[in-house]
Amino acid sequence: MILEEEDWIRKAQQGDTNAMGALFKHHYSFLYKYLLKITMNHSVAEDTAQDTVIRCMENIARYNGTSSFSSWMITIATRLYIDRTRRNKRETKWLENEQRRSVTQLRWQMERQGEQWTDLLDGLAQLSDEHRIAILLKHYYGYSYEEIGSMLGIPAGTVKSRTAYGIKHLRKELNAHDEQT
Image 1 (cartoon, rainbow, N blue to C red):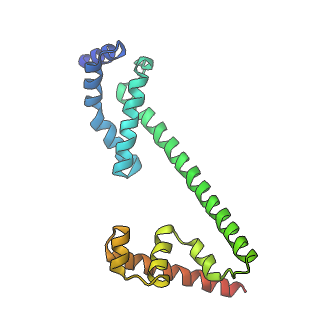
Image 2: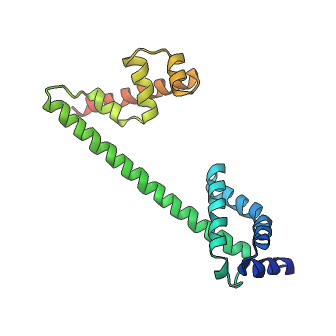
């Protein structure tokens, strides 16, 4: 560790914000490049780097010098990234379960009201929101690709692609269902 860095750390631990700023400015590029390599995602790396700096600032008094400052930072960054990844997986799983419950409830309500629940509705429920919306707006409500693109704020070509992919997936689901029955 260079003497200047030791001085920054000592002063930062005593509450010197200028020293803390210099310390994190010195290490930020290293931290960001490390996170970019492990996340493979610019925005996630940037967010995690910022969260890491905040966490390090909050805990600067705990840094004891047994490892290099950059090692201490990447340890914190790695833990933050792993925690975020786990949390995202739990949230995704929860959302998927919630959607399945919602579809089951919708199906029950429709059947209770004497409306028919079709295999097509089952297939639509399996699609992502972006594909389901594109298909419904195009083929159920009759909007043009350009109109849908304008509604969603995306290019008409993207709408066309989402619609084509969604229909392909629907056909696959319906064929699989037909083979089972």
